[in-house]
Amino acid sequence: MANSRLLEAVPALVDRALQGDRRSIARLISRVEDGGPEAWSALSLIYPRTGRAQIIGVTGAPGTGKSTLVGEIAKLYRKSSPALTVGIVAVDPTSPFSGGAVLGDRIRMRDLSGDEGVFIRSMATRGSLGGLARSTTDVVKVLDAAGFDVIVIETVGAGQSEIEVARTADTVIVVEAPGFGDEVQAIKAGILEIADILVVNKADRDGAQSTVNALHAMLDLGTAPHGLLHHGVLMPSVIPTPAKSDERWQPPILKTIASQGHGIDEVITAVAHHRAFLAAQPEGQQRARLRASMELETILRETLLDRLLQSVGADRLNALIDQVVARTIDPYSAADQLQRAAVQA
Ligand SMILES: Nc1nc2c(ncn2[C@@H]2O[C@H](COP(=O)(O)OP(=O)(O)O)[C@@H](O)[C@H]2O)c(=O)[nH]1
Ligand SMILES: [Mg+2]
Image: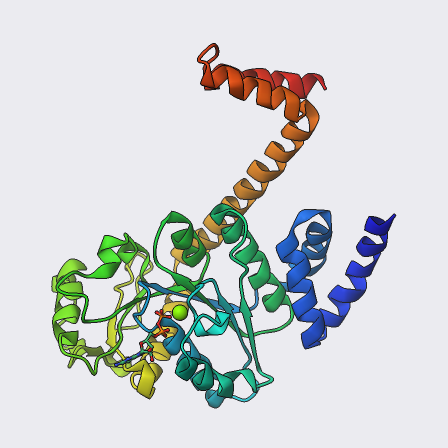
């Protein structure tokens, strides 16, 4: 009864959110994060309105300056055109956006949060990490449908599911910073491969150039045309526009000082170039397809498992778990038994 009343409220809530009402957007996001039938009905209502936003993932080790960079990117987009709106989804628990920052950072973020054209949402870190990847894409869909032109997702680049979150973006920016010794953190975390743009932030610090050089060597940019890099910063005017459809994207390496707002326009230019590149490439289409198939697979896995567990019941499941522990049955046979039981139920 209560549940059906809540379900009825969804279409009205979706309507108000799609009209850009900020409180309704926030409430719709919470509903979507909660998951379940209500979330699904909301998502199916908004889905036709999604696919417009440009989605940028920003990932990297903690402390490299991701949140600061995201803030500056948002500010510059807003400055470039007052009509251009920006959504920020922070999956970083230490993010100033999620309230985990030192006071100075929070004060700096205020000039963003007072802006009606910017919507900031921190993801609840409850639940499984796999679930986090799904709910993050769902939250992005809400902001997309609500009309935000650019959506930036900040995640800490550590672990497979964070990588999955970043991968759902159209353009992935991997942030690196000097001062971690000689190691390039992104390589340690295994996130270098997903970088469309590499940013060496904290370029005001010693060792920034050697980080750039290390990344350069790592990416094997030896084949790139000379003159592309100017003081380690890729000059926007000389970023080649790809002509052939089989041309591969070369991730540019850019230096920024996010805390001073330096180098941000180059980052935004590189994002625009990458977007144009994807639009002209079959790779762009492939990405959309890969994303759709990954998403469908995740949903199927969750819903099929849910249904199976509901139909066989917790007792039966627990009994089988005991048997697996006692080694009277192997996990494959146990899974097979559960599936057969579910089919019969
Ligand atoms: N020196 C210097 N510090 C920076 C720069 N960008 C960010 N920071 C500082 O680095 C710290 C971590 O930044 P934050 O954006 O929270 O990093 P995150 O953990 O990657 O999101 C904060 O104290 C920032 O003020 C920069 O370009 N240069
Ligand atoms: Mg952060």
